Image (tube, rainbow, N blue to C red; front, side, top):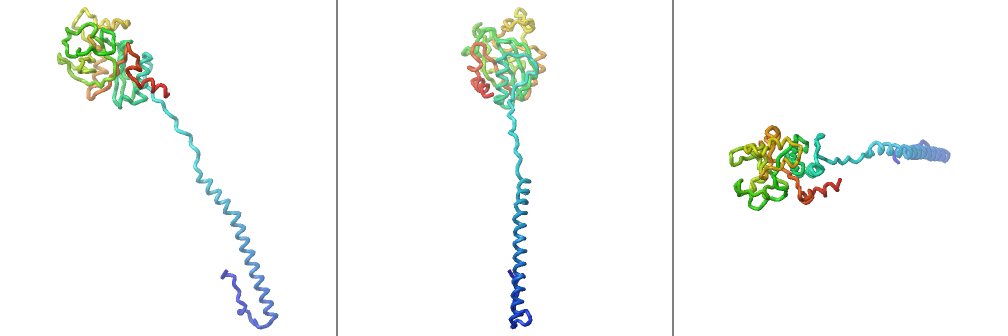
Length: 263
């Protein structure tokens, strides 16, 4: 250690034995003091450094965080009564995103009800509706090409399924929502031309059986159509889910049961 080196020749009278002995003793004393100082410094460091290290580590130790809660998304009916099938399908749509960020409509044939939802599965409106007079979930082959007068009673079904629906016009030039264009199934304002059918009276009835009168189309009150259906389809397509009445919901919408079992 250069800072503590003592050169004997620097002491006066280095040739004298007594002086040399005195110088040697002074050297030993100097070295001993230096060594003691060094050892003391090392001891202090050994005590202080671990404390500093522990303090520093504690300051950067990441705090444990609780796992984020898993939110199960469901449809919101806002207190409006709906059948178990309608709720099940609506919740499946909300949870799975099957509506691909589009507004959607659920048609419950068993209950003769229509529910309109926005893209976030929030109910915007509900109404009674008139359905096809024939019970069934499938479209009769070729029915879309027949004149209305040629459609047989057993062919007047409202088909079940998932449909990408869009606004259009019927043969009379009226704006409608085509649910299944190829098979001439639409959603429109209630038709009242044939007085004997009493369609307005049927819409107001509490009996579900009274609602089965159309050739397959979904008839709605004019006010409901103007307030909810027309705006929903004004600028873009939307999805229409027609619930079955003979088949099970799982037969028509195969993922409904699977999604429900995951919650």
